[in-house]
Image (cartoon, rainbow, N blue to C red):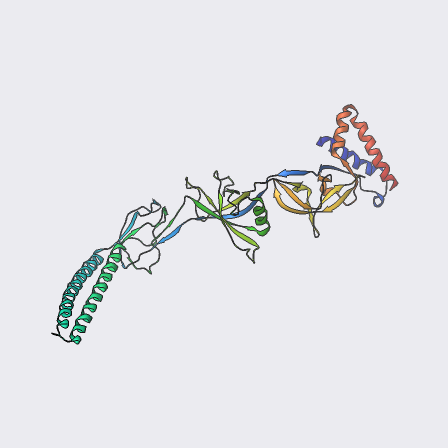
Length: 395
């Protein structure tokens, strides 16, 4: 097919030279083109956007008391369970404080018990006028002070027990633990910063944002208010497709005034731990309801200062410019919002050689003539060239 077209173009150019016409008077010969008739096509639309993987939980493990980091109970990079022992801070001084606070409580309780008995005796004596009301009030105040001392001692014991409990650091979540930022043997305090971090990996989230127009398309397409029926897929950094699908867990309550976008979050299962927080992926939201659109191949579309345009062949086989407005890409084609209608004959091959009002020859017509008259190929070309030459001589 290409050999036949190339032969035709070669002969056509030769005739132009042999015609002897002044170059300034020559007309542009017809251009061989291939076209596509525009039709409404049903598509299942996909909305693509960059996204970033984030964990459901990301926890910094820190010391809540002062002391030497005595021991760790895991290997860096391990998967740890919620409640699993991670670190031991030197406990001896805190155990001693618990013992001291316990003794103080027992002493305060003994003093309170004695003052309670004194108050009871004072109540009997004041009824019999053996002691004054002032003496009774003094016993009452002493009892109340001793009761407060018991409460204070009990609180001190509770705090000492809490601090002693902080000598053991447990994992607050299931997840993968990082390398150590503070190693064993160092003195740590609450202000020392993180000793390690733990991130949850299964399930895992992907954050992304969509322009308000895409948000509206998804909202109108979904049957559920939370958009959880929209299928979400992700494409990994190596261009492979992640096997599991995700569901939208969250979308924002406002459009960002600087970006014009709405924030989204989707959740994915991650049993194989293939997805790691911080990685970038391509998010693809697959809409449920197909819609009918006009699709134009990307190679047919050109762009000028006025915008994107295509060449459309009119009934006289002349190329005319039509400016178009496109939406998203779909399988290497543009979804046309405005500018084309069903039946338009759009040039998809030979675009670079066209000018407005250029006369064209359909590639399919040449092929058809070759198939119908294979033994008369040379004479058929002569007829086509003769017509072209005649036009050129008139010029």
